[in-house]
Amino acid sequence: FNPVNPAIVFIGSDVGLYRSTDTAANFTQVSSGGVWTDIDVSLSNPTICYAARHPSWNGNNGQIYKSTNSGATWTQVSTGLSANMRIGKVMVHPTNPSIVYFVSGKSRFSNGTEALYRSTDGGVTWTQLAASLSGIVDCVLDQTTPTTLYVSVTGSGVHKSTNDGAAWSLQTSNVGRIFLNRTNPQVLRLINTNGVWETTNGGTTWAQKSAKASWDQGFTPTWNYETNNGLLCTYDED
Image (tube, rainbow, N blue to C red; front, side, top):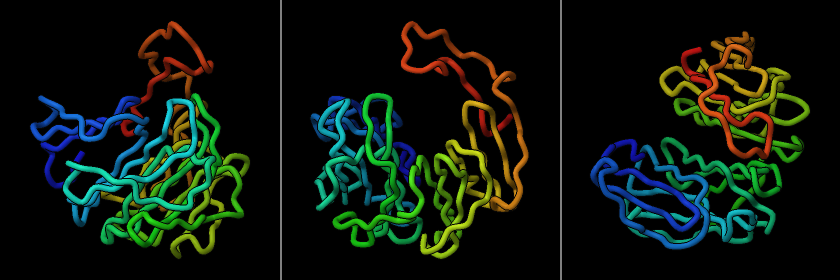
């Protein structure tokens, strides 16, 4: 979604990238081919958008594409990335649209390098952050104080940096997907297959909000790649 113009909506698919300018009533394909796994729009300049594209549904070799006209057209900008990138998350700095991050890692159908990268030149060149933390599965960026980042790391837990990723400190041993409250960045929630945890003080202390046993089952899968298919949880209300 465009943070300034809610009529602009994007859908990334395994046959191309689609865009709507009428609140999802109609869509136009703005880029054909490839698998588009994430899209983010600059909050400070919403004409600038970034997206992750892969050549196939089970392939790595992800690249970053950029639009400077609110997503009407897209061009690959990333250079020099490893061939083992499966990019699952893209994040644009809230005040500087030239700074962008991505998280690479494992997906349901591919096995990319688990790592966090940052670009400071509009997505052209990239530097790995938190290289000493092996197994990064997620990252969130504080929208109010963007020098603060959190990463979730397999085997250790959630780590926090308050200096643009130069140094990291362990906050909790739980590992999972992290969700940050945009209006109150001291509040974060972490969700994994055991439950939901919350911090209200920027990661210093955490309390469990729910366990998997209390979740509602939203659907019954007809095929399985893992045992947790079918479990749904409203992580922002539990």
